[in-house]
Length: 105
Image (cartoon, rainbow, N blue to C red; front, side, top):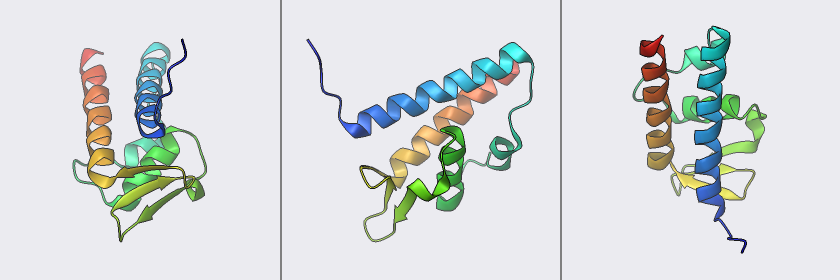
């Protein structure tokens, strides 16, 4: 039986899978992460840095990501919405996973 997954949950799953895949690919090939990923590695990035980080992560054009200041929501292609706190938590989890991967090398 097919299960319908809300867009918000799907986006989280997609971003986590891409992050783990990217971390694994870097480890397998012994390659440094792209320069775009090195730019934003602070624990408290600006909203603009967060948007760019995820745009780079999904290899998508930055124009598809926007930030609605009034509602404090990040919007992806006008369909999926996530508040900044959730996005920041995902970002920190990705960085934590990358740091663990780097320590294992």
